[in-house]
Amino acid sequence: MRGVRERFVDSPTSLGAKARARRWEWFQQAFPDIASMSVIDLGGRAESWLRAPVRPAHVCVVNLEKPTGTAPEWITEEQGDACELPEHVRKGEYDLVFSNSVLEHVGGHERRQRFADVVHELAPRHWVQTPYRYFPVEPHFLFPGFQFLPLAARVRLVRRWPLVHTPPEDRATALRVAMWVELLSRTEMAYYFPHSTVRAERLGGLAKSLIAVKTA
Figure 1 (cartoon, rainbow, N blue to C red):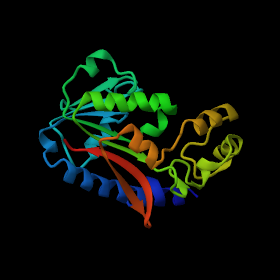
Figure 2 (cartoon, helix red, strand yellow):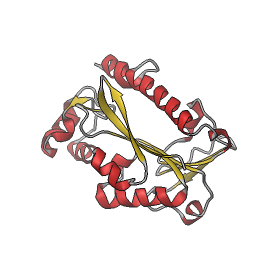
Figure 3 (cartoon, rainbow, N blue to C red):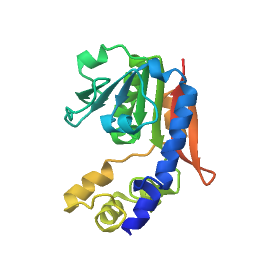
């Protein structure tokens, strides 16, 4: 079963990797002058930018995890909550806000609204991606319809489903993992980003993820 997960998500030749490569192509098309931009990445990691096919002039990466301390000089790592940024980060000058698969993890409508407010405040442009709620296969757990099941059923699946990335050690951890993901609809994305173009990333003709894009 591990090979199944690698085929769909984890390996460099997986469907997920191909989707990410296509997403980067769209990103470059949307922001052709990215090489001269200062970018703030909410919830990202330095290693993701080191693997990316684009290199902005500078990237500030904000994550709840502690900085690695090994990033090159064009990447600044900051520890912080994307919904409640440290003041010195909030006061920075940025051309573009970037976020990939983070919005579904911040926790509820109020926190999602705070996240969106931060995005609008930080820069005139943004690229915010999140998995689509109504794609048949939940992308974190690779289980069909996982997001529509009662919480108790999701907890049981998290503990037993072999395609979970890291099986939880106990029920309490499984409960936290199951509640950690809240996928969004197109209506919600349009609400949080009313002046953006909401673009659908498709797989097999079905919307797999949504991207709120504002280019100016």
